[in-house]
Figure 1 (tube, rainbow over the protein chains, first blue to last red):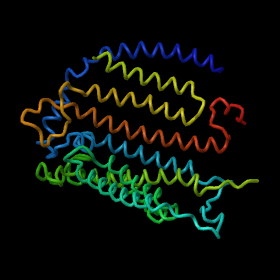
Figure 2 (tube, each protein chain N blue to C red):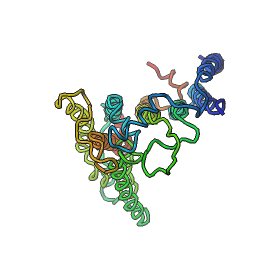
Figure 3 (cartoon, helix red, strand yellow):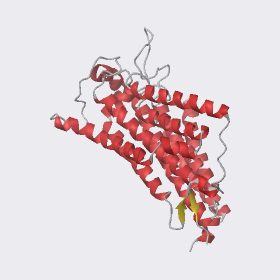
Figure 4 (cartoon, each protein chain N blue to C red):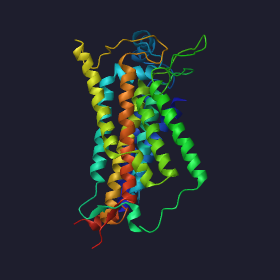
Amino acid sequence: MSRRARLVFFAVAAAGLAVTLGVGLAGLPSFGSQLTAYARMLNELASPQRHVTDVVSAITFDYRGIDTLFEEFILLAAVAGISVLLRPLSDESRQLPEDKAPNRKIPPPSPAVWLLAVLLSSLLTLIGLETITHGVLTPGGGFQAGVILASAIYVIYLGTNYATVERFQPDPLLEASDGVGAFGYVVIGLLGLLAGDVFLSNVVGLGVTGNLIAGGTIPLLNLVVGVEVAGGFAILASEFLDQTAVIRTERR
Amino acid sequence: MSVLAYGVVAWLFLVGIYGVVTSRNLIHMVVCLSVAQSATDVLLLEIGYRTGGHAPVFVSLPTHPGPAVDAVMQALALTDVVVGAAVTALLLALVVQVHKRAGTLDPDALRATRD
Protein backbone atom coordinates (compact mmCIF):
# COMPACT_ATOMS: atom_id res chain seq x y z
CA MET A 1 0.00 0.00 0.00
CA SER A 2 1.44 3.40 -0.94
CA ARG A 3 1.80 6.08 1.74
CA ARG A 4 -0.95 8.11 0.12
CA ALA A 5 -3.41 5.22 0.09
CA ARG A 6 -2.50 4.42 3.68
CA LEU A 7 -3.19 8.01 4.75
CA VAL A 8 -6.58 8.00 3.01
CA PHE A 9 -7.39 4.67 4.66
CA PHE A 10 -6.35 6.13 8.05
CA ALA A 11 -8.41 9.31 7.52
CA VAL A 12 -11.58 7.28 6.83
CA ALA A 13 -10.98 4.91 9.77
CA ALA A 14 -10.02 7.75 12.12
CA ALA A 15 -13.14 9.73 11.22
CA GLY A 16 -15.29 6.68 12.00
CA LEU A 17 -13.42 6.07 15.23
CA ALA A 18 -13.64 9.74 16.25
CA VAL A 19 -17.42 9.68 15.78
CA THR A 20 -17.96 6.47 17.80
CA LEU A 21 -15.46 7.61 20.44
CA GLY A 22 -17.20 10.98 20.63
CA VAL A 23 -20.63 9.38 21.07
CA GLY A 24 -19.26 7.02 23.72
CA LEU A 25 -17.43 9.74 25.66
CA ALA A 26 -20.48 12.03 25.46
CA GLY A 27 -22.47 9.33 27.25
CA LEU A 28 -20.15 9.44 30.27
CA PRO A 29 -21.22 11.43 33.34
CA SER A 30 -19.77 14.95 33.15
CA PHE A 31 -16.16 15.34 34.27
CA GLY A 32 -15.65 15.42 38.05
CA SER A 33 -19.36 15.23 38.89
CA GLN A 34 -19.77 11.87 40.61
CA LEU A 35 -18.17 8.62 41.70
CA THR A 36 -19.49 5.11 41.15
CA ALA A 37 -21.12 3.38 44.10
CA TYR A 38 -18.27 0.83 44.06
CA ALA A 39 -15.66 3.56 44.47
CA ARG A 40 -17.54 5.32 47.28
CA MET A 41 -18.01 2.00 49.09
CA LEU A 42 -14.33 1.06 48.86
CA ASN A 43 -13.21 4.53 49.99
CA GLU A 44 -15.45 4.15 53.04
CA LEU A 45 -14.71 0.51 53.85
CA ALA A 46 -11.05 -0.10 52.98
CA SER A 47 -9.60 1.55 56.08
CA PRO A 48 -11.87 -0.12 58.67
CA GLN A 49 -11.87 -3.50 56.87
CA ARG A 50 -8.19 -3.86 55.92
CA HIS A 51 -6.48 -1.47 58.40
CA VAL A 52 -4.61 0.41 55.64
CA THR A 53 -4.64 4.13 54.80
CA ASP A 54 -3.75 3.83 51.10
CA VAL A 55 -6.93 2.58 49.44
CA VAL A 56 -5.19 2.08 46.07
CA SER A 57 -2.90 -0.51 47.70
CA ALA A 58 -5.88 -2.25 49.31
CA ILE A 59 -7.63 -2.48 45.92
CA THR A 60 -4.54 -3.58 43.99
CA PHE A 61 -3.42 -6.28 46.44
CA ASP A 62 -6.63 -7.31 48.16
CA TYR A 63 -10.03 -6.43 46.67
CA ARG A 64 -8.73 -6.96 43.12
CA GLY A 65 -5.78 -9.20 44.01
CA ILE A 66 -6.43 -11.69 41.20
CA ASP A 67 -6.04 -8.89 38.61
CA THR A 68 -2.65 -8.08 40.06
CA LEU A 69 -1.66 -11.76 40.00
CA PHE A 70 -2.24 -11.85 36.24
CA GLU A 71 -0.63 -8.45 35.80
CA GLU A 72 2.46 -9.85 37.49
CA PHE A 73 2.41 -12.85 35.17
CA ILE A 74 2.14 -10.51 32.15
CA LEU A 75 5.30 -8.81 33.35
CA LEU A 76 7.03 -12.17 33.93
CA ALA A 77 6.01 -13.37 30.46
CA ALA A 78 7.25 -10.14 28.86
CA VAL A 79 10.62 -10.40 30.61
CA ALA A 80 10.93 -14.07 29.62
CA GLY A 81 9.98 -13.18 26.03
CA ILE A 82 12.61 -10.43 25.87
CA SER A 83 15.27 -12.78 27.26
CA VAL A 84 14.44 -15.25 24.46
CA LEU A 85 14.32 -12.55 21.75
CA LEU A 86 17.63 -10.96 22.77
CA ARG A 87 19.62 -14.18 23.31
CA PRO A 88 22.83 -14.65 21.29
CA LEU A 89 21.69 -16.03 17.91
CA SER A 90 23.46 -18.78 15.95
CA ASP A 91 25.84 -16.31 14.26
CA GLU A 92 26.51 -14.31 17.42
CA SER A 93 28.75 -14.83 20.41
CA ARG A 94 29.23 -13.27 23.83
CA GLN A 95 32.52 -11.44 24.23
CA LEU A 96 33.29 -9.15 27.12
CA PRO A 97 34.36 -5.70 25.90
CA GLU A 98 37.85 -6.04 27.41
CA ASP A 99 38.69 -9.03 25.21
CA LYS A 100 39.18 -6.82 22.16
CA ALA A 101 42.23 -5.01 23.55
CA PRO A 102 43.72 -6.92 26.47
CA ASN A 103 46.76 -4.61 26.72
CA ARG A 104 44.64 -1.50 27.23
CA LYS A 105 42.70 -0.70 30.39
CA ILE A 106 39.21 0.78 30.20
CA PRO A 107 39.60 4.43 31.30
CA PRO A 108 37.94 4.98 34.69
CA PRO A 109 35.00 7.41 34.84
CA SER A 110 35.66 10.90 36.16
CA PRO A 111 35.58 11.20 39.98
CA ALA A 112 32.58 13.56 39.77
CA VAL A 113 30.48 10.99 37.86
CA TRP A 114 31.61 8.23 40.23
CA LEU A 115 30.66 10.28 43.31
CA LEU A 116 27.29 11.16 41.82
CA ALA A 117 26.65 7.48 41.04
CA VAL A 118 27.53 6.41 44.60
CA LEU A 119 25.21 9.06 46.08
CA LEU A 120 22.38 8.43 43.63
CA SER A 121 22.46 4.64 43.84
CA SER A 122 22.34 4.62 47.64
CA LEU A 123 19.59 7.24 47.59
CA LEU A 124 17.60 5.24 45.03
CA THR A 125 17.97 2.04 47.07
CA LEU A 126 16.79 3.86 50.18
CA ILE A 127 13.79 5.42 48.38
CA GLY A 128 12.96 2.04 46.83
CA LEU A 129 12.90 0.29 50.20
CA GLU A 130 10.91 3.19 51.66
CA THR A 131 8.35 2.94 48.84
CA ILE A 132 7.94 -0.84 49.33
CA THR A 133 7.53 -0.70 53.09
CA HIS A 134 5.18 2.30 53.12
CA GLY A 135 2.90 0.88 50.43
CA VAL A 136 0.04 0.39 52.89
CA LEU A 137 0.32 3.91 54.34
CA THR A 138 1.10 6.33 51.50
CA PRO A 139 1.09 6.15 47.70
CA GLY A 140 3.62 3.56 46.56
CA GLY A 141 4.07 -0.18 46.68
CA GLY A 142 5.81 -3.07 45.00
CA PHE A 143 5.49 -2.05 41.35
CA GLN A 144 6.80 1.49 41.80
CA ALA A 145 9.52 0.44 44.24
CA GLY A 146 10.74 -2.38 41.97
CA VAL A 147 11.42 0.08 39.16
CA ILE A 148 13.25 2.46 41.54
CA LEU A 149 15.42 -0.39 42.90
CA ALA A 150 16.28 -1.64 39.40
CA SER A 151 17.33 1.86 38.35
CA ALA A 152 19.80 1.95 41.28
CA ILE A 153 21.80 -0.80 39.54
CA TYR A 154 21.91 1.22 36.32
CA VAL A 155 23.23 4.29 38.07
CA ILE A 156 26.13 2.06 39.19
CA TYR A 157 26.70 1.17 35.52
CA LEU A 158 26.80 4.86 34.56
CA GLY A 159 29.36 5.59 37.26
CA THR A 160 31.64 2.56 36.81
CA ASN A 161 31.86 0.05 33.98
CA TYR A 162 30.23 -3.07 32.63
CA ALA A 163 32.35 -5.55 34.66
CA THR A 164 31.43 -3.88 37.96
CA VAL A 165 27.73 -3.89 37.22
CA GLU A 166 27.93 -7.58 36.24
CA ARG A 167 29.34 -8.26 39.72
CA PHE A 168 26.48 -6.30 41.30
CA GLN A 169 23.79 -8.19 39.43
CA PRO A 170 24.63 -11.85 38.83
CA ASP A 171 22.17 -13.19 36.25
CA PRO A 172 21.04 -16.25 38.28
CA LEU A 173 20.14 -13.99 41.22
CA LEU A 174 18.09 -11.66 39.02
CA GLU A 175 16.30 -14.52 37.28
CA ALA A 176 15.64 -16.18 40.64
CA SER A 177 14.22 -12.99 42.15
CA ASP A 178 11.94 -12.54 39.14
CA GLY A 179 10.60 -16.10 39.47
CA VAL A 180 10.50 -16.18 43.27
CA GLY A 181 8.59 -12.89 43.31
CA ALA A 182 5.93 -14.21 40.92
CA PHE A 183 5.73 -17.56 42.73
CA GLY A 184 5.58 -15.86 46.14
CA TYR A 185 2.38 -14.10 45.09
CA VAL A 186 0.77 -17.49 44.38
CA VAL A 187 2.05 -18.92 47.69
CA ILE A 188 0.55 -16.00 49.63
CA GLY A 189 -2.68 -16.57 47.71
CA LEU A 190 -2.61 -20.24 48.73
CA LEU A 191 -2.37 -19.21 52.41
CA GLY A 192 -6.01 -18.22 52.06
CA LEU A 193 -6.92 -21.72 50.85
CA LEU A 194 -4.90 -23.34 53.66
CA ALA A 195 -6.79 -21.27 56.19
CA GLY A 196 -10.04 -22.68 54.83
CA ASP A 197 -11.01 -19.49 52.99
CA VAL A 198 -10.88 -18.50 49.30
CA PHE A 199 -7.71 -17.95 47.23
CA LEU A 200 -5.93 -14.66 48.05
CA SER A 201 -8.20 -13.90 51.00
CA ASN A 202 -6.55 -11.72 53.63
CA VAL A 203 -5.96 -14.25 56.42
CA VAL A 204 -2.88 -12.82 58.15
CA GLY A 205 -3.40 -10.66 61.27
CA LEU A 206 -4.42 -7.14 60.21
CA GLY A 207 -2.47 -5.10 62.78
CA VAL A 208 -3.21 -1.50 63.77
CA THR A 209 -4.21 1.07 61.13
CA GLY A 210 -1.36 3.53 60.56
CA ASN A 211 1.41 1.13 61.57
CA LEU A 212 4.12 0.12 59.11
CA ILE A 213 3.09 -3.54 59.33
CA ALA A 214 -0.68 -3.53 58.95
CA GLY A 215 -3.13 -4.81 56.40
CA GLY A 216 -2.41 -8.54 56.66
CA THR A 217 -1.23 -9.93 53.32
CA ILE A 218 -1.02 -6.50 51.62
CA PRO A 219 2.53 -5.61 52.80
CA LEU A 220 3.66 -9.20 52.05
CA LEU A 221 2.30 -9.00 48.51
CA ASN A 222 3.94 -5.57 48.12
CA LEU A 223 7.23 -7.18 49.08
CA VAL A 224 7.05 -10.12 46.64
CA VAL A 225 5.87 -7.84 43.81
CA GLY A 226 8.74 -5.47 44.59
CA VAL A 227 11.24 -8.34 44.37
CA GLU A 228 9.72 -9.53 41.08
CA VAL A 229 9.58 -6.12 39.42
CA ALA A 230 13.10 -5.16 40.58
CA GLY A 231 14.49 -8.44 39.20
CA GLY A 232 12.44 -8.18 36.01
CA PHE A 233 13.43 -4.60 35.16
CA ALA A 234 17.09 -5.28 35.99
CA ILE A 235 17.01 -8.28 33.61
CA LEU A 236 15.29 -6.13 30.98
CA ALA A 237 17.89 -3.40 31.07
CA SER A 238 20.79 -5.86 31.19
CA GLU A 239 19.45 -7.72 28.12
CA PHE A 240 19.34 -4.47 26.12
CA LEU A 241 22.77 -3.46 27.45
CA ASP A 242 24.23 -6.87 26.48
CA GLN A 243 23.18 -6.21 22.89
CA THR A 244 25.62 -3.31 22.59
CA ALA A 245 28.25 -4.30 25.14
CA VAL A 246 28.70 -8.08 24.92
CA ILE A 247 26.94 -9.73 21.98
CA ARG A 248 29.01 -9.64 18.77
CA THR A 249 28.03 -10.80 15.30
CA GLU A 250 30.58 -13.11 13.67
CA ARG A 251 31.23 -11.68 10.21
CA ARG A 252 31.56 -14.19 7.44
CA MET B 1 -15.00 21.23 30.95
CA SER B 2 -16.18 17.71 30.07
CA VAL B 3 -15.57 18.36 26.37
CA LEU B 4 -12.02 19.50 27.04
CA ALA B 5 -11.26 16.63 29.44
CA TYR B 6 -12.58 13.83 27.22
CA GLY B 7 -11.39 15.59 24.05
CA VAL B 8 -7.81 15.18 25.26
CA VAL B 9 -8.37 11.40 25.42
CA ALA B 10 -9.67 11.16 21.84
CA TRP B 11 -6.95 13.50 20.56
CA LEU B 12 -4.12 11.59 22.32
CA PHE B 13 -5.40 8.26 20.96
CA LEU B 14 -5.86 9.48 17.38
CA VAL B 15 -2.57 11.39 17.25
CA GLY B 16 -0.77 8.26 18.51
CA ILE B 17 -2.39 6.06 15.84
CA TYR B 18 -1.61 8.71 13.19
CA GLY B 19 2.03 8.48 14.26
CA VAL B 20 1.97 4.68 13.94
CA VAL B 21 0.44 4.89 10.45
CA THR B 22 2.86 7.50 9.07
CA SER B 23 5.99 6.39 10.94
CA ARG B 24 9.25 5.96 9.01
CA ASN B 25 11.18 4.50 11.95
CA LEU B 26 10.26 1.50 14.07
CA ILE B 27 11.45 3.09 17.35
CA HIS B 28 9.34 6.16 16.57
CA MET B 29 6.44 3.78 15.90
CA VAL B 30 6.79 2.13 19.34
CA VAL B 31 6.84 5.56 21.00
CA CYS B 32 3.68 6.54 19.06
CA LEU B 33 1.98 3.39 20.30
CA SER B 34 2.88 4.44 23.87
CA VAL B 35 1.28 7.82 23.21
CA ALA B 36 -1.93 6.14 21.99
CA GLN B 37 -1.86 3.84 25.01
CA SER B 38 -1.43 6.76 27.43
CA ALA B 39 -4.89 7.94 26.31
CA THR B 40 -6.35 5.06 28.35
CA ASP B 41 -4.41 6.21 31.46
CA VAL B 42 -5.84 9.71 31.09
CA LEU B 43 -9.36 8.36 30.51
CA LEU B 44 -9.20 6.11 33.59
CA LEU B 45 -8.01 8.93 35.84
CA GLU B 46 -10.65 11.31 34.42
CA ILE B 47 -13.49 8.85 35.01
CA GLY B 48 -12.32 8.53 38.61
CA TYR B 49 -11.93 12.28 39.18
CA ARG B 50 -14.23 14.15 41.55
CA THR B 51 -14.18 17.97 41.59
CA GLY B 52 -12.34 19.11 44.71
CA GLY B 53 -11.56 15.52 45.66
CA HIS B 54 -8.39 14.50 47.48
CA ALA B 55 -6.16 11.48 46.87
CA PRO B 56 -7.60 8.19 48.21
CA VAL B 57 -4.98 8.11 50.97
CA PHE B 58 -6.63 8.55 54.34
CA VAL B 59 -3.75 9.79 56.45
CA SER B 60 -3.02 13.25 57.95
CA LEU B 61 -6.12 14.79 56.37
CA PRO B 62 -7.55 18.19 57.36
CA THR B 63 -10.71 18.17 59.52
CA HIS B 64 -13.09 18.56 56.55
CA PRO B 65 -11.27 16.77 53.75
CA GLY B 66 -14.22 16.54 51.34
CA PRO B 67 -14.68 13.62 48.97
CA ALA B 68 -11.85 11.37 47.77
CA VAL B 69 -11.33 10.51 44.10
CA ASP B 70 -11.97 6.99 42.75
CA ALA B 71 -9.25 4.62 44.00
CA VAL B 72 -10.42 1.79 41.70
CA MET B 73 -9.56 3.80 38.59
CA GLN B 74 -6.15 4.66 40.03
CA ALA B 75 -5.47 0.96 40.64
CA LEU B 76 -6.53 0.21 37.04
CA ALA B 77 -4.25 3.00 35.77
CA LEU B 78 -1.40 1.34 37.68
CA THR B 79 -2.16 -1.94 35.87
CA ASP B 80 -2.27 -0.05 32.59
CA VAL B 81 1.14 1.53 33.18
CA VAL B 82 2.73 -1.84 34.00
CA VAL B 83 1.24 -3.57 30.95
CA GLY B 84 2.23 -0.58 28.78
CA ALA B 85 5.84 -0.82 29.98
CA ALA B 86 5.89 -4.58 29.28
CA VAL B 87 4.51 -4.11 25.75
CA THR B 88 6.93 -1.29 24.95
CA ALA B 89 9.91 -3.33 26.16
CA LEU B 90 8.85 -6.38 24.15
CA LEU B 91 8.36 -4.31 20.97
CA LEU B 92 11.74 -2.63 21.40
CA ALA B 93 13.37 -6.07 21.71
CA LEU B 94 11.71 -7.03 18.40
CA VAL B 95 12.98 -3.78 16.84
CA VAL B 96 16.55 -4.65 17.92
CA GLN B 97 16.29 -8.00 16.13
CA VAL B 98 14.64 -6.47 13.05
CA HIS B 99 17.52 -4.02 12.76
CA LYS B 100 20.03 -6.86 13.03
CA ARG B 101 18.31 -9.02 10.39
CA ALA B 102 17.18 -6.35 7.94
CA GLY B 103 19.73 -3.60 8.56
CA THR B 104 17.04 -0.94 8.49
CA LEU B 105 14.42 0.54 10.80
CA ASP B 106 12.19 1.92 8.03
CA PRO B 107 8.98 -0.15 8.01
CA ASP B 108 8.46 0.62 4.30
CA ALA B 109 11.90 -0.73 3.42
CA LEU B 110 11.26 -3.99 5.24
CA ARG B 111 9.09 -5.36 2.43
CA ALA B 112 12.11 -5.55 0.12
CA THR B 113 13.98 -7.78 2.55
CA ARG B 114 11.24 -10.38 2.87
CA ASP B 115 12.40 -13.75 1.59
